[in-house]
Every structure is written in structure tokens, then in C-alpha cells.
Image (cartoon, rainbow, N blue to C red; front, side):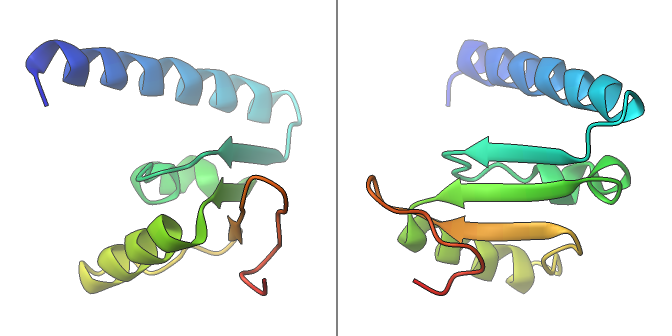
Length: 97
């Protein structure tokens, strides 16, 4: 990934995560990542994620690959973080189709 794209993505993530932190302080209890992709918010910001209910919505295949990869690296799914497999027409909770 080129340096410009990487810095831009980092700033966008930081902006959103700062906003989530502000809203959590105001009483917000959920954070939904639609099209979560390889986002690792729940692992990277475990301090904040532990105070929220985090829903990661994405295609089943990439979501399973990410979960397996993170577990192999020693990052089990955090409490309060739900993987929600989705297709363009249907979202399920907890990976049960």
C-alpha cells in the first residue's frame, strides 16, 4: 500500500475512533462496523471496545479468514464483539446463517 493511502486510512480510523470514544462518554453503547473488512478495532482499541457492544458486519468468507488469522496471532475474539456474517440481502447474528 502506498504511503499516502496508508496515512489517509490511519487518519480516518483515528477520526472515527475518537468520535466513538466521545459518544461512548455520552452514553452510546453500540458500535457497528458495516463492511468491517480487516478492521481490527476491537483488538486495537480493547480499552474502548470493552465498554461497547461491537458488531462487525461483513461477508462470511473474509470475516472467517480474519477471525482465524487473529486467533492464530493470539488475538481471540473479545467479549462484547459479535461477528455478523452478511450477504447483500441478509444479515445474521453470531454466524448462524
